[in-house]
Length: 407
Image 1: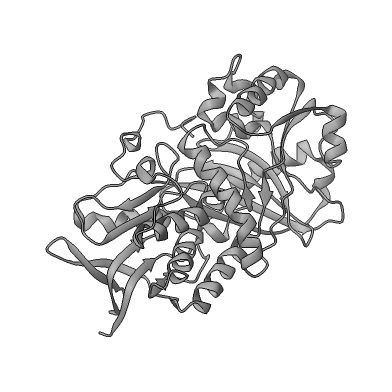
Image 2: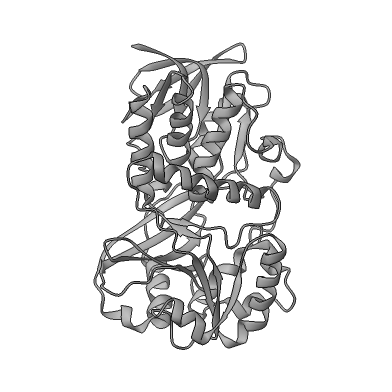
């Protein structure tokens, strides 16, 4: 057994853990960042890169998202390139959905977002790759796109420049504690990392580490699958959502005239257990990212035939010109979803020196700002946002029997 001293041990080197380590190191804290594999191996390295405000709910979710979007303007200047593109975002729709989408724009404007409702012609002028059959689209100039795994790499590099230590292939098997006070962590190969405080930022794997403390966080592993095509010359520019995606959001389901069947694709009805989050994004190299079928398979992070068939079937119908493209890669990732779709930030009730930074189902927009908020709290600064809304004992964290429309 070896003992590596550190003031703070951060468990999980995804976007949240890497951000936490970077902001702590920048405040002069001695930090060791651990990952079971490598930085960005989990959900942070497997998502389509949306920095998406379009459908954030009013209140704490929107406040966190807006603060997160503002932080990106600083990160672009401070970090190595991670392909940040302030492209804006669109949700295209068809004629039988137009009335609901008009109500959506009204609601979003009231929520503080600068959304516009575009007709068929205006939408295709902004994004010529949109289907010719659309009735229109919503437009939010604040949405953006990143290469998430490169953001994680840039955060880790910057943290190391500031003195943080990064340990790869360091799978934490348990948190070490004495009399209710955390003193470090132990990895599955016998290494022990001591720290005056441990930050758990392990996404869907956080819950298992809390079981010995009798704590059962309501975090559900939500699987999203993605297909990546060969490069194409035609530029999409804005990140795109389709109509099947928005039925997952609670505020949308409350709009006048909303009926979920109007926002289903026929292929969804034959896909047992899968819901479609219809989206397209394009990387700087021209490759298209197509997604995303959603389900809850536990900790199974493998892509499936059914999920990919749903993705390719829906999007090949919407965008016929994609049908001849080669699919170069497919994968799946597990997002940590909470009942209220808010992350959990702050101390663990009843356990001293243990901090949570987990539950980020919208990690691209909320991850970096969460790391900053946690670092501010731990170093005695007043956080930029009130963290009470994200605490582990908030009432809205109680699971709901309705798994659909709770975002």
